[in-house]
Image 1: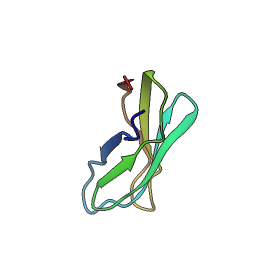
Image 2 (image 1 turned 45 degrees about the horizontal axis):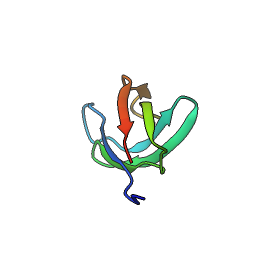
Image 3 (image 1 turned 90 degrees about the vertical axis):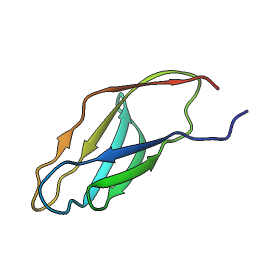
Image 4 (image 1 turned 180 degrees about the vertical axis):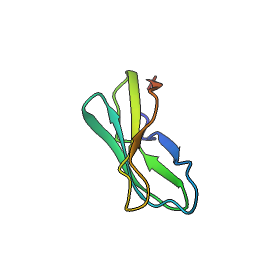
Length: 79
């Protein structure tokens, strides 16, 4: 069995330095969370079973920037 976990990079495009929290979901299940620093976060995903997933990243926002949700990204786990 593979013990590797997927990693996604989330970028928040906004004027000025961006900080805050990001959540990655597959459906209603949270599969990863991270902290954005300078507009970027690398999030290690939870161990996922073999199959197809539709992931969505959500930025919670902060005092200066409104939260947002990204488009769906498809992920296929083969091992």
